[in-house]
Each structure stands twice: as C-alpha cells, then as structure tokens.
Length: 411
Image (cartoon, rainbow, N blue to C red; front, side, top):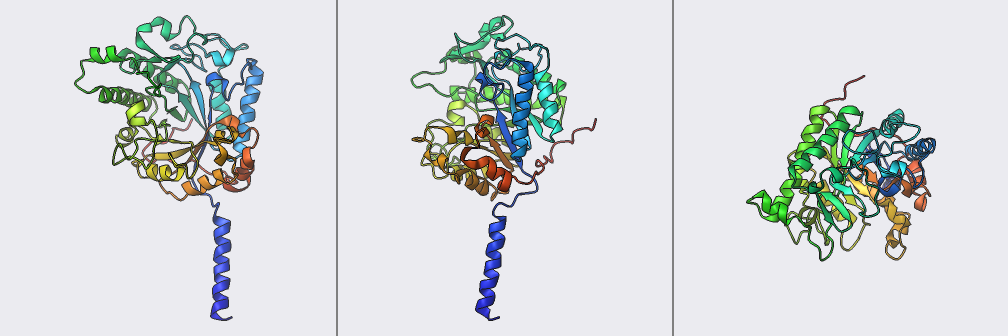
C-alpha cells in the first residue's frame, strides 16, 4: 500500500473513531432534573390531592428520568416557607393538599417517600429549598394560621405580589437556618439545594423596600454591600448547619446565569444581561465558592449557543474558569423547546441540546448538567429523550465524588 493510500486509510479510521466517540461519555457525570412543586409546576399536578395518585405520578416521573439516563433529582420541598414533609416550623404546602396546613389523607410523608423511591433507583435526592420566599401570590395564596408570616409579620417585606423574609432580619435568618438544620437532621437527603431567588429580581420602577432595615442596622457598608453581606451571612450559616448535622451532605446553589457583565467588572463574563447576581440579586456566588461554603454551583444557562446577549458557549467557558475547585453543573433550559416559536426558535432545533452537551463535555472543570424542568420531558421535545437514551446518556454513570466531603456512613 502506497503512502497516500495508507494516509487515507489511517485518516478514515481516525474519522470513524472520532465520530463514534463524539458522544463518548465520561466515567463520572452529574445528570439531574429539577422537579418543581411551586404552583404545581411539575409535581403533583394541580388538583391531584389523592395520595395514591401522587405516589404513582412521582414514580412515573422518576422512571422516565432514570430511563433517560439521569442519576439525580432536585425536588422542591420548601417552595414558600411551607413543607412537603411534617415540620415543627412550617405548615404543609398548599401545593400538596390544596390548602396550606392540611396534611395528606390518608397520611404519608411525601419527602420520606420520595427519598426512598429515588434511592431505590440508585439516584441522588437533593432537597430544593427556597430561602426567602414566604407568600407566593399575595391575596390568592392559601396561608395557614400557623404560617410564619402570621406569627412574625415584622420579619417580612412585600415586593410586587410576593412576600419575602427580610434578608437583614437576624431572627428571620435564624429561623431559616433552623428549618434547614431540622430537614437535614431527620431525612436522608444527599444535598440541600437553593435556587436563584435571593433578593428578588428587580421590578421596573420599584426599589426593594428595605430602607428602614438598612437604617436600623447601623451598618457602615453602603446599601449594596450591606445587602450582599446579608445573603453571605445566611449562606455561611446554612453551610455550617448542614455540615454540623451531616458532614457528607452537599450544599449546592443554582444562581442566575450571569455573575456580572464584563462592562461592569473586568472579571465578569462577555455578556449583556439586564440583571445579574451580584448587583441585582445581591448574591456574590464567587465569594461562596472561594470560601468553600457551597459544594457545587449550577448556573442557569437557559440560553442557546450564539445568543447575542447571553451566549451559552461564552457563559460555559466563563463558569468553567470560576468554580474554584467546587463542582460545576450546568443548568440546561430544555423547557424552552415548548415556548413561543417566535422567541424560542433556536430551541426548535433538535441539535441545540446535543450540541450543548458536547460542548460542556469539552471542559474538565464541568461535572455535569441539571435540566429544567421535569415536565419538559413528558412529550419527548425534539426527540431529546431518544437522544439521551440512545446516545448521550445511554450508559448509566456514577455521580462525581466530592473528595473534600467525608463518605456517608453505611447503615
């Protein structure tokens, strides 16, 4: 065989090898799905108060995700200072039984049930808790007499149509930390997970009304730094409480996609976001990573590759350089495939999600993905369930170990 023939033959073999391995799967990869309970977004469906139906529906969703290759679920168990489990601090969630404070009948513990079913399938269970939201929709929410907003109304601030814990209130902070400590102490959760709602997203023309709290604080910090310090404080306290109860339990945060834009900070990302974590939500994610208060970060990169304001690829690259040795899971916006075609046209492209998966696997500092949200997979959008099952997640893999955490004791 001549040199040219050998070259062509070798090149062809290399090309075949590359094609076969373009979907090569790592040994370890986090593959999670958010299951939202607020406003009955994913589970249980609105109006499904029958206990047996709730259980069957949760199992159906778990089995669907397991078939798709997932190895973790992130389930919202405290959406608005309420609980999907019996709590001495907060009432039963209205999104479980239709009325806040009403226990399920016949009685069961949904959190215990969900953890057991998840672990049976070899998947991790992350307990998703919203830190500050207390009354989701004022005037329409079901609020029980024992709800904390009724017992301590002075701890709360109304902004828009929602009531929030005042992040500056030390008693409110102590209460939230107690809720998390209690949950971790009583349940076999693999992680506590918080989303992007710290100080709320800005409402145009309305300032968050915490001037009195700021004045009463006597702080020497400017107001923005003071707000950030309030959030820093509760993150640190929650981190300590979790590790005091069970040192092996992870603490993860899923922030908005942009920490800061480059035109605001030389360390920021090449993005043009109207709001960001640092200046608007007062969540200094990078500090929490540097100080090792959290074990993983899952930025919500719900944008397509090439977006002119927040480009998925640029944000992926930026976060991969700013995880400071903690695990980085990328929040994937599969829900957008069902959105308005006029605004979400890139998400009608069947290659969008596969291309994102291939991109993130190019970064050794990215350990996996979390998909928003569970119901997005019901109708196999763009054939993505098939893509995951047959190509990208066709082998079940282990969750990346966190070497800095002690191993969970065996029963």
